[in-house]
Amino acid sequence: MIKIKNLNKSFNGNRVMTDISAEFEPGKINLIIGRSGSGKTVLLKSIMGLHEVDDGEIWFEDVIFNKLDFVGRKEIRKEMGVLFQGSALFDSITVEQNVRFPLDMFTNKSPEEKIDRVNFCLNRVNIINANNLYPAELSGGMKKRVAIARAISLNPKYLFCDEPNSGLDPITAILIDELIKELTEEFSMTTIVNTHDMNSVMGIGEKIIFISDGVKCWEGSKDEILHSDCDLLNDFVFANALARKLRSEK
Amino acid sequence: MIRFLSQLGRYVLLLQKVFSKPEKASIYYRQTMQEMIYLGFNSIGIITIISFFMGAVITLQTAYNTENPIYPTYLIGLGCRDSIILEFSSSVAALILAGKVGSNIASEIGTMRVTEQIDALEMMGVNSASYLILPKIIATLLFNPLLTLISIIVGIIGGWISGTLAGVITSEDFIYGIQYAFVPYYITYSIIKTVFFAFIITSVSAFQGYYVDGGSLEVGRASTKAVVFSSVLILLFNVILTQLLLS
Image 1 (cartoon, chains in turn blue, orange):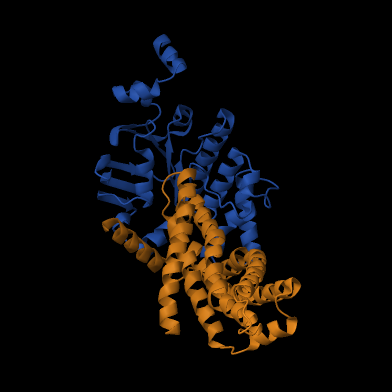
Image 2 (tube, chains in turn green, orange):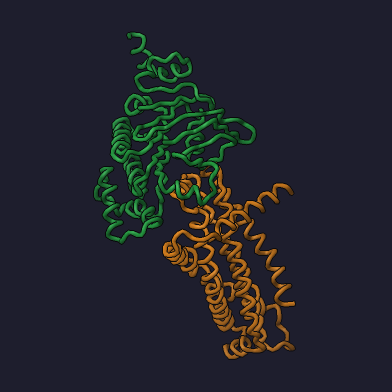
């Protein structure tokens, strides 16, 4: 369980996040949605500790994460897996070495055990016979899947995904969404996904938080999102022509 | 002034992070060995070529500017040797390495920053500054003195070949000249300077890359700044170290 309480964040005097509170439940996909520039990534990076909040509290179970020092945070970070928007695979090493990296860094497993774990993670995300390829040789979808494999290599309790299907075609995007959903349920992770893709929202959104201009405007499920009375949310949800048409027909 | 102090503060804080206890010594050892190849071994070629021709030019210029019957010709060899050991192989080679290695480090780390690879390291609980920068610093501190020695040897060979081929000095006189009044401390002096310059090149370039904010344009700017700031600091410390070590 991750809880955030009254988070505020400014950059050079410009407030980008105002008084945001929420709870993210384990074993569920928690979505943070909003327009580009609404503050989703700042919120996600603040929860992960990559940005320092001005005030407020970030709880991981019963620990206030943002009050911990570097060493304290490091212990919790070992339980986090992250899928970055651009995958953030290490360019200079192979797929296998990328997935193996956290195992090398933080475990005392034997080389055989590490390889077994790497192959398990890669198989789990349907990456076959690509162990010796470099990230530059992979497609966008493969990069995302390798990044997911790396994120789950240490069996994390928390999974953070920043726009996991940006830059992907709709079919690959759905595959990535489904993979995240399956892994979340399989490993009972607390998963937080940043997205502005309505396909993802309607596909995997179990708990959804809508943010606009750094303010939380709405919270609910994918079933409730179509019947909201929040104008800003409705503008966002029914932004495309097809959605508007379906709504008017309904 | 405030901006300068702020940057200096960030640089010191970065170094504090860099020199903290490594997560896993075996991984840092492996990284250091790789960096020795990338930053050190791969620089042997350019250092050899430049040292050879600089040695050649120093010998010819010394010869043509000291054409006087009062001066014995072996002084050409002596001039070549001392110029190379005292100044060229440490300072000029460091300026060349600031261009090659410095821009390489700044652009590599800068690209890792803008593509969120550094964030990924941090999120894994890895001290990214230490993991990325410490092996580079250790590798250059250990390998650059070797480059200096190679530069000295190749530079003198370049001088000997050009001097004898151009007919400005005989082979015997040149060899006598490079042995005449030899001060072994000059080698130590050159290596001490090299170690300082290696630290400047690596740490300043890594600092520029580590704090890149933006995209590819900013990475390019960081790379340029890395070369400019490293070069200026090398020149400044060259004066300070010369005064301290030779006075």
